[in-house]
Amino acid sequence: MSKDSKRKNLQYSLIRPLSNEKWQPISIPVVSILISFIAAALVILLMGKNPLQAFYNLLQGSGILPKPSYAGYKGIATDFLSLLNAMTPLVFASLAVAVALKAGLFNIGVSGQMLVSGFLATILVGYSGLDAIIAKPLVLLIGFIAGGLMGGLVGWLKYKFNIHEVVSTIMLNYIAQYVISFFIHMYYIDPVSRQSKYIGEAARLTLVNVELANLKMDIPLGFILAIITAILLKFVMDKTVVGFEIKAVGSNSNAAKYAGMNVGRNTVLAMVISGGLAGLAGVTYYLGYFSSIQPKVLSSIGFDSIAVSLLGNSHPIGVIFSSFLVSVIDQGSTYMSSQSGIRQEIASVIIGLILLVSACGEYLKQKVRRLKEKEVERKEIES
Image 1 (cartoon, helix red, strand yellow):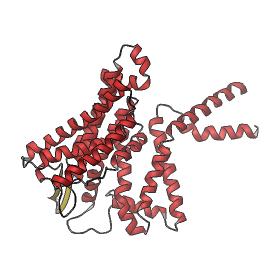
Image 2 (tube, helix red, strand yellow):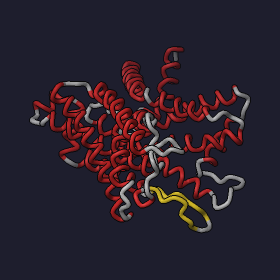
Image 3 (cartoon, helix red, strand yellow):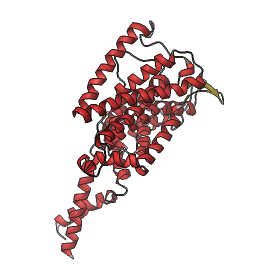
Image 4 (tube, helix red, strand yellow):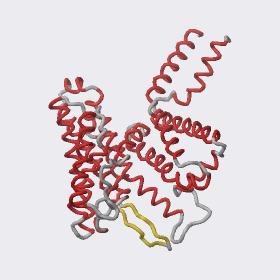
C-alpha cells in the first residue's frame, strides 16, 4: 500500500465517527466541544496550572460537583438552582435565534427585544402591586407580546421593503437602549443603585431565598417553561404545517413561493415567534435573574445566544444542552478563579473557543462529506 493510500486511510478512520449524517447534529458539536476543551487545557498548561483541577473547580462552582465547604444556608442545591436561574433566559434567547435561522433570518436584535419586553413588563406589572397569581402570568404575557411585536416589525420591514434584518435589528437595538435609558433616568431611577427601581416580589419570576431543607434557594419559575417551550417548538417545527412552511421558506424562498406558500406571511410569523421568545428571555432576565434594569446596557445574553444556537445546531433540544454547557462554564468561573488561581477571564476564553469551533460545524460536515466520497471512489477503483 502506498504512502498516499495510508494517509487517506488514516484520514477516513479519523472522520469515520462523523460520517453518519443521522448523528452529525450530535457528533459534530461534541467533537467541537472536545477540541475546545483540549485547546483551553493547553492554554491553562502554558499558565503553569493544572487544567484538570481547573475544570474540576469549574464544575464545583456551578453546582455540578460538591464544594469542600459552604457558607450558612448554602449547599450544592443552591449553586445548582442558581445555575438554572442564569440558564433560563439564555435558553429562551437561543430558541429565538434558532427560529429565525430556520426561516433563513438572522435575529441579531434579541438584546433589544429583551430590553423592551423587560422594561414594559417592569413598568406595567413590576411596579403595580398586583398579587403574584396575576402578576407573574401577566409578566410572561406582556414579555411575549412586546417581543413579538418588535420581531414582527423586523419581519414586516424585511418583506415589505427588503430591509435586511441585521440592519433593522441593530438600529432597533440602539433605539431601545437609549430611549429606555432616558425613561429610566427620568422616571424610574433608583438613587442608590443608579439602576431602575426594584420590582415587587409578586411580579418576580424567581422566588428568592426560599427556605427548604435548611437551605436558602433561588427557584427560577421560568426554567420549566423554557424546557416546555423547547419541546413544543420542536413539535411545531417537525410536525405542523406552520413549521414546515417556515423551514421551507428558510431553505429556498423562491421554491416555497412556487409551491404556493406565502413567503411574506411566514417571514413575519417567524420573526414574531422569534421576538416573542426573546421577550420571554427579557422578562426572565430583568424580572427573574435580576429585579432591575441597568440603563444604557444591552444584555450580552442576546449576542451569546447566537453562538449558543449554532452550537446546538439550531435544534430546540440541542439549544437546551448548549445553554447548559455555556452556563456551567460562566457560573463556575468565579470559584475556579479563587481555587485554582486562574483568572476568571479564562472561562470566557473557553466559551469563545467552543463557540468558535462550533461555528465551523458546516465546514466539518462538508469536509467529512468530501472525504467520504473520495474513500468510496478509491475503493471502487481498487476493486
